[in-house]
Figure (cartoon, rainbow, N blue to C red):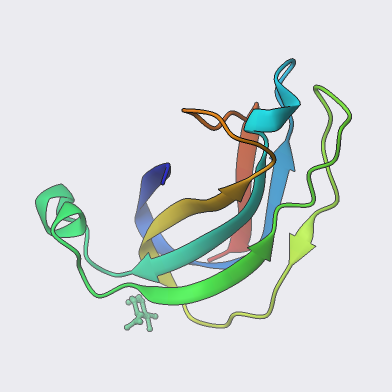
Length: 109
Ligand SMILES: *[C@@H]1O[C@H](CO)[C@@H](O)[C@H](O)[C@H]1NC(C)=O
C-alpha cells in the first residue's frame, strides 16, 4: 500500500487530517488511511519498522468532487511524535496507484 513518511524538527501532536482530491481518476482516490507516529527519526530505522503507534485509522473524507478539499477528519490524540507515517489502506477502485492532490496533518507543538 502507498505510504509516506514525515520527519519533523520538533515533536508535535497531530489532531486532524485534511485531504484534497486530485484532478482526475476518481478510482485512485484514497478511501481509508492510517496515521502512525514514532519518535525515531533515522530513515533507515523507519523503513525497517520502528515501533509505530497508531493514531488514526478511518476515512479520508474524500468524495467524487475533483480538486477539492474534503471534510477534515478530526481525532483525539495527546501524544507528541517526531515522525509520522501515512498509509493508504483502501482506495475507491481497482488501480495500480493511488492519487490525491494534498494531504495535511494538522496539529500543534
Ligand atoms: C516523543 O517526544 C516528545 C518530545 O520529547 C515527547 O513529549 C513525547 O512523549 C514522545 N512520544 C513518545 C511516544 O514517547
